Image 1: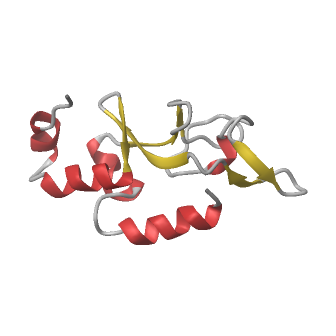
Image 2: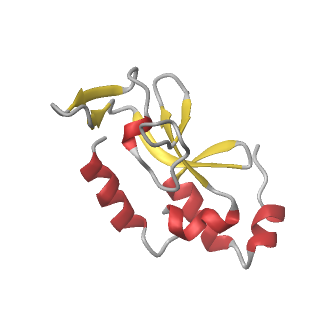
Length: 116
């Protein structure tokens, strides 16, 4: 995953509920998951503060595969996916978009979705 990957995903999910701006009010928090290890990382700025959108800079060195000469994250492991933490679970962008699409309002989303 690269910054370009994130931009392309934002374009693909814009208007569908799979981007932070469209689902933040429902309690979705941007995050990343390493599918190899199962670890979930909240999206953070380089200084560790929570980011309101997907930001690669705060990911730990264990998933970073390339940095620029200035130290910025250029790429992370291919096993890392962007998604959201919602109700204590990691969801992909597609799963988040489905929940938002099914919602008639915030209360129906929060009350109507259960996880197996």
